[in-house]
Length: 430
Ligand SMILES: *Cc1c(COP(=O)(O)O)cnc(C)c1O
Image (cartoon, rainbow, N blue to C red; front, side, top):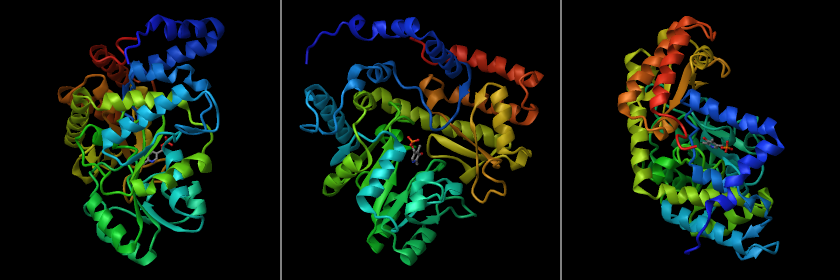
């Protein structure tokens, strides 16, 4: 592999061509980059992927039909994309110590659909965490296909500790005998006890599935326990802490490999997005470096510092803190709803989302909490020293502004956000 690639021959001209042919869209690409650069990005499920990942995403691999799997395609001309997908698979297996990997799911939800397709039939009972305690739509929520096609049973957290109630998980599993038991979600600040889930799944003969969409990057960075050895199957997204392209993937035990592959294609999907598969390969290699491991460690340190800074200011962290890249804060102590907090922060240049808290008295579109995550700020190079300032900015935006952009305090906060981002810019090399 000693090919000399001239960078100007491939990607160099592409943006210039777009500026010429479609200035309207070119302008919007630039204004969205400006938006990403000009606010404090605290959405826990977002990150800023590398220019190398972006290059693979913007490649002519998008043109190629490659239905099937390497060396078993339905189309000719797949020699080069076969090499790409084999690299992506090998890199995923090595990164996660997995027996099998499927890198074709278009997204986290598509990956999850395939897991259902592999192990369950419509009408079967499945069990996951309830959405309002931190689960995900695709874990049997009633408006999702998973809630419409399966008989979904939900566990939650203990009201006292706000940690997953493993006694409840076991009791519900024994009562309902689900085919699949799902661990994971989108607003769980704490490490999950995978061994406890494994034991419960074994007791009732269920498949143990971990949806690691949120935290898989912390597993890749070796700073959070891996579910890969304990679970039958692990699905995940590649665009959250992991910092790859928007997409999904599945790793599983060898005994489930054929089932998972058939469920991704042809059961759920058609042709894979080979440009995205290439970008996943680039990302998996990036994640295997000491630099990424240091990044993952810093994401958690920052998250813990931010949660503590918000706690000091009266924004109570659910469970008292965090083991991960995200924390969830109860705003009832400062008398502001999640929806108002989101609006006020937005007007002050701070991007975060309202979130229900366990046993929330408010409806989901109002909510009593906010969710904050540190993947993006950490990619921009911020460390624990900056997290106290970020906590202060959030606290002031939530408690001292009114949601309008011309509010004087909101303007002052926006000025401080701009100064902070000047020292820690997003995409400094573009
Ligand atoms: C984000 C997420 C998904 C869905 O991923 P998409 O790429 O948005 O489809 C699924 N499960 C969990 C737990 C998630 O956090």
